[in-house]
Length: 203
Image 1 (cartoon, rainbow, N blue to C red):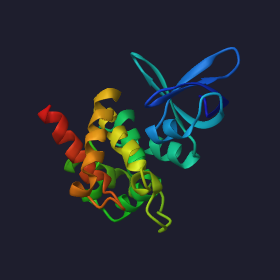
Image 2: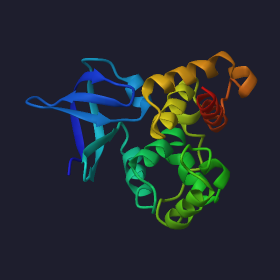
Image 3: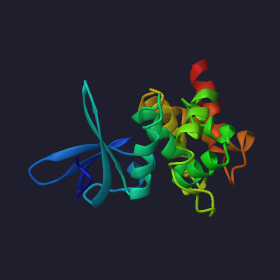
């Protein structure tokens, strides 16, 4: 098990980083927010979770241990794999996710692409007593702060299988009519994700 890595960033992708560990470089899947924050050549430290499947091993990384912990917990829910777990923590963040589970807020959970009503009910049922209490503080930054809605929407789209180019194009379309879709000062990521999916379905 690889719990944490530290090294220089060699490559930055839409949803991954290649991190130089000396004799080897590891490709780590990260939330798009993380990929937009780092710079080539800078040192990064990531808390990691290894997901092993028959077709390969994938390392997921987060700059905060809380994100990594919640990412792993969400995958214990039946029917939730790593891509959906990544979308949940990327779009909602740990605090909003805990709050939604505590309050059985299915509406918030189903705003995440890939989560339907039954999936949201399973998440509440299986995690309510295990994910820990919310801190009751401000709304989590990944889904609300400034331009970070772009990364959150892109994360949701790529988690559903759209490629990075398609996701970026859909986000650019939303940016041009943001005021018509949501409050530009406090964008609703769930509304934006659904609108992006509609635009992709029409294309």
